[in-house]
Amino acid sequence: MSLLDVSIVNVALPSVQNGLGASAGSVQWIVSGYALTFGLSLVAGGRLGDVLGRRVMFLISLTAFVVTSALAGAAPNETLLIGARLLQGLAAGLLTPQNSGLIQDLFRGAERGRAFGLLGATIGISTATGPILGGLILAAFGDETGWRWVFYVNVPVGVLAFVLALRWLPKRDRDGLDGGGRGLRGRIDYVGAVLLGVAVLGVLLPIVESESGSTGPLWLIAALTPVFGLVFVWWERRVVARGGTPLLDLRLFTEVSGYSSGLLLGSVYFCGFAGIFLVMSLFLQKGLHYTPLQSGLTVTPFAVGSSIMAAVAGRLVSRLGRALTVAGLSLIMIGLAVVAVVVLLVPQDVIGGAIAIPLLLAGIGGGAVISPNTTLTLECVPNSIAGVAGGALQTGQRIGTAIGTAVLATVFYATAAGGFPAALSTTLGCAIGFMLVAIAIAVYELRRVGAGRTPVRPAGRD
Image (cartoon, rainbow, N blue to C red):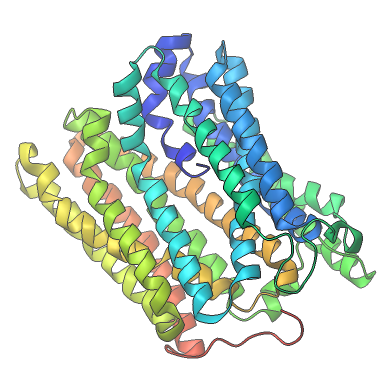
């Protein structure tokens, strides 16, 4: 639900404008505001899960997500809808790190890889099928009020998830610790949370505003972001030196094997990956005049390949290691390159069918990147900080998503004067450039640790 709500709302924006008479700027904030608060709350959500217990945080944040979804669906005007979306994104950011943290708690060895594989399949399906589900919901409920059901659909799903979580999520983790009693042995680093929040806000807010056409003083905030980042680093080291519990233990980046490179790889990969669906949607709907549903169905091969391969890759990652990531990135680049060539060569009335196979190939490659990278990045992270480590990893992905979406959309619009096929081809070339950087990181890590190997576990309690 939390990932679907990043993309599913895009196809409902015309319906929102028709139903509420919303302005173009407000409509942009309905999408971008969610992504903004989502990215801001990930690390704090991970830390809260480490301290209070992941089961407790999962249930609290899931409840908040369901309630804010209902508020968004019932919003009588654009202002309240934006407010509900900001709160919904905040709840999603608190909810998401509990997934990777629970997998770290509950699974070991090859089992953990398979669990992350299923999580990766879910991510792939959620990211790519949002436009399809949005199109189906709008077709069922109409353009005037269909957008409300894009949010209301979260309510029954969320209630079911809550019931299943009560039954299935253990009250104690595998170390015998009570999932609700961790607050007695840790505290929240509020100063660190504010400093990191301002730094992340300084990256994301100017991007969000630029997507809606605004420029100006917000870029001054971006220029000051490194200052807040350096102060955050100083503060976290000071907390550790005083024997306290930091929001984000910086030793993750220096002492935990593979974490820094995995976080960087994931961030760069999402720069190239996330914007692909936006520019494909623009090309198919503006250039080929597809309906939102037709547009969503056209990119379905990517979702199918990604979801199937993610589950398979979860079983292979313990044996193949980074070699699997390198192979996946190579397949993505090949698939995108073929799409970039095909749209220039074939007649426009057959493009949808002609790009199905290369999109499937790219999807297979994507499935071999996300879940294996998550497994390899978190494999040596102690369970006591698994939540905040997962939150930081996903914060990098959200920042990558924001940057990549802005860059690819800018390239597409800047080159659209030469025709939509040429614009898509050029934009996919830009995405391939991001993938080349990601594969360079993966190859470096592969050479550092070797391909097939037994993961090294950190000493002490896991």
